[in-house]
Structures are given as C-alpha cells and as structure tokens.
Image 1 (cartoon, rainbow over the protein chains, first blue to last red):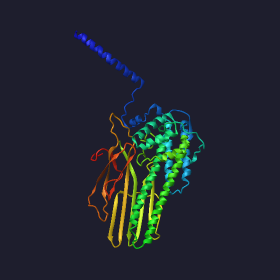
Image 2: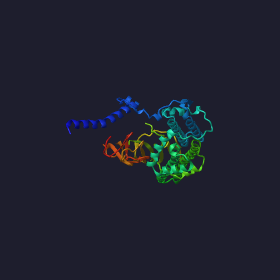
Image 3: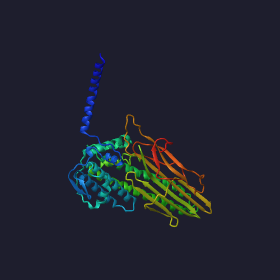
Image 4: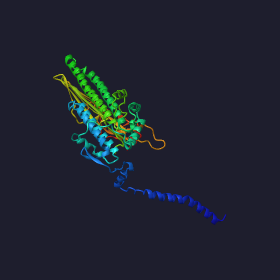
Length: 309
Length: 170
C-alpha cells in the first residue's frame, strides 16, 4: 500500500472517531451551557446557591402566617408547628418558671419549632428561608391556629432528603435506632424515615435515657459526697446527721424535677405523634419506652436535613 | 470529617473548715444534647441552720479545669476545691465517598493549651505551660465524650480538634 493510501485510511479512522465526539460536545453545549467558573468569593457563593431545579423557589399561591409570607403548600406544616409549640407552652405553665423542668420544656419548644419550620422549608422547596425560623418563633403568641387539623401528608420532595439523611444515620448508628424504625413500622404503613416521625421517636427515647443518665450520675455523686460528709462534725453527730439528710433530700428534689420533665416530654411527643402523624395508639410510647438509646448515639445530628452550613 | 465540639458538663465544689465553721457549695452545669439547652444547679450548705438550699440560676462557668485543690496551712484552716469538665465531640454530615471509604470510628485528637494552676498549696513545678492532646475515637454518628488528661491545669477554650494522628498539627 502506498504512503498516500495509508494516510487516507488513517485520516478516515481519525474522522470516524473524532467527529461524533465533537458533535456530542456541541450538542451538550447547546442544551446546557456551562456556568462560568467562579473567580471570586461572590462567584463561589453564587455557585453554591445554584440548587437543583427541584429545590428552586417555584412561584405559587402564598399566605401570611407568623408575620411572614409563606407558600400555601407549607402552611399545614407551619400550623402543626405552632400547635405543638403552644401545647408545650401549656405543659411548661404547670411548673414554676425558675424550675429546671420549665426551662427544659422551653428548650424543647424551641428545638421542635425550629425543626418543624425547617421541615416546612424543605416542603416549600426553597421558597421559605430557614433563617426566618427564630423570628417566626417570636410571633407565636400572635398566631391563631385551628384546633383540629388532619395529619400531615408525606411530601415527596422532602421525603427523599429525609430518607437519605436518616437512612445513613440508622445504618451507621447504634442498633437502638434500627429498633425504633421497627417499632414505628408496627404503627404506620408509611416509611418513618421519610417524615420527621423517626427523628421525633429517637428524640423521645434519647431524651428519656439522657434524663435517666443524669439521675444515675447525680445519685453516684451524692453517695460520694455523703462519704465525705460522714467525716465532718466528729463531736456533733446531730449536726452531721442533719447535714447528710438535707443533702440527700435536696437530691430527691432535683431528681423529681428531672422526672417531671421526663413525664412532660412524654405528653409532648404523644401529642406530636397524634397531631402530625395520626398515630393515636398509646402502646407506641410504651414500646418506645422499652428501647434504650444510649447517651451519645444521637444528639446534635438529629436535625432536619440538609445540615445547616 | 471535621469534628465539632462543645462543653458537655461542668462541675465544681468548694468545701472546707475554718475554725470548725464548715461550708460546702456545689455548682453543676450540664448540656442537653438534644435541645442544646444548659441546665444549672447550685447547692449550698448553711452551717447555722444545718440546711441546704438549691437554685437553678444561670451562672458563668469561670474556667475549664480538672482540679483537686487542697490547702491546709494550719490554724484550723482547711480549704478544698474540686472541679471537672467534659467535652462532647461529634461529626456532622459524614457521607462516605470513594471506592473504599474509611470506616468509622475515626481516630481524632482534641488539643488545648493548658496552664498549671499555681495558687495550689502543693503547686506543680513551675513552667508547665504546654498543650495537652487527647486522642479518642469518633464514631461515624453520635458523639464521644472527652476528658483532658491533666489535673490542676486550666484549659483554654475553644480547643482544636482534628481527625488524624496525635502528632499532626492543624
């Protein structure tokens, strides 16, 4: 074969390989032109905010709720958030404002309200900003809500995010979290990982165990210091007795405060399971009571995904 | 994996005897890891009425040290101070990636600058101002509690934490 023929065959082979590639690249450019590369911080930030289409704010009907303009689709979720926060308010009102139980309930109110607000943000698909949650909490007293509402429907968009995040949490965590999923499966046909039901159940079991641990630690510390007090006032046994008795009495008061908080948590989560998820069977809480979520196996990770940056 | 951390609990007790006048004050603060809220208790013994009072008032944590201070210079004077604290460390948003992602738990280090407490009646040798590094294993989810090594040292806060070896630096 002549050199000219060889070159022609080579050129033909190259053309066969290269032309489809060029055509494909040109088509891709036409369909989705590349975003310019971020060259400064502002650009980088803009790129980070370039969310997938599914999460972009979509225009739709809005309502005014908690002093904010919110998408109508998120309203039932926010109504439920306010109802739960108001229920916790009534539970907290049963205790003196300077008691630890009252403060614990106010902390739980804030945590659950912000979780619920973030959940509504997921449902709203980016049309509601998580940063407005604390301001909405301040408007709680001014907002009226209907007494009876239907359980919250599973939102397909939020469900994916929730199931992905909580699925990983269950996979990598203590078996107690898998046991909670199994227990929930007995009471609902929905996947508990697709809503905040799983998060609530872990919070309930985990907070109960956390209080149990505090009580246990306090009892241990009290016994330790009791040993020290037994060495005091060697010539005044009455005074020593009074001191030691008072020390144990004050421990009982503190532990009662914590147990009251535990009972109040139970009421709060029973309300949430009924109001948000339509789960009215009291056996659910009894079953969750049997699961021990060791201190440290969940906690700061129990948030509505994605994690705040 | 970038670990985050916070003070999980802090406890403090001052007690002693001054010419047969006995006093004892306990202060405890602990963080609820689910709500992020701090709980405070102060318990104080009253020598004259032989009774205890408790309050839930919020107080400032003056410093982070693991202390077992004992001072008894004589003349019927005896002063003791016991303090301890624990740190919670966790990782958020761990998403395994790659063909062979490292499995938890992750070897981590918590590091702080530590200064010897000199006022002690039995002071440690002077010049011991250095960093203390506490290695621990961080689970893939959940958190680990960490107590730094040394007693009678005041620890600086915030600390540093990283995943890696004991002698790595940030």
